[in-house]
Figure (cartoon, rainbow, N blue to C red):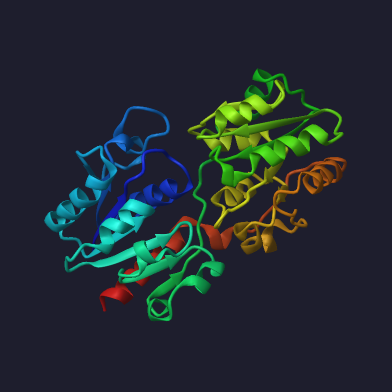
Length: 335
């Protein structure tokens, strides 16, 4: 099968990880290519190009202007002539929506259904059940609900000890950790307020990630709150955490939940869409969104207990079976 992925963003985050990992795995049995923006090919830790397997054919767009990338992507698709064109996020899906080639055009709903991006496509992949309610009836018959996954990305040897020592975290201290882009939807401002109000002896807070709101959050956070910015190996920081917290206002699925579970971390989470979708695994009561006082109480209650690693059954959230489900969906569209 000839498969082309399109992702025209510039920085690595959960949706980009999904696209990169899927393309890499599909390239073993299939002819796989990917279209990326010129910014994504830059030499920096949070770019995309260096994360792709050599077996994936990479097409780096020339245009740096976003609206022109849509038209360039369509021209490239015509020359590649794939069986499946799989779009990820805004501009990639808009490029597919106006593409008139013979291939089947598929998009993963990394956020939610958007008519302008998705209405004209041949198939959709919903990453969580709640997304199905917004999809028009005529497209529901060409939609598959396939959960996100976690791949095997273990922490580096000794990273728990070295990261904690680097930031003055003692072995008996409780490190409360959050991981994700520092943008408004992640609710890190509420988490900082809740942690400030909480009375937790020997507790530290780390918020790992970069984004538009990083400087604002750094300014409101106490000096002892750890904010190292983007980390190319999140499993290292997850190994250093004792508790994982999601304070999100919106989290469509929350790949980070699976990453935290893969590290065996107990989880405190707001009642975002993704946390509700995975609550059967999270198990702990969900916290109201944007409620600093409820988050404070959850932190105090949770960290007042002995904190220990947990075992989660993630067998249904591994990449290999999910990739097979996606391939089967492709074939159903081509039939």
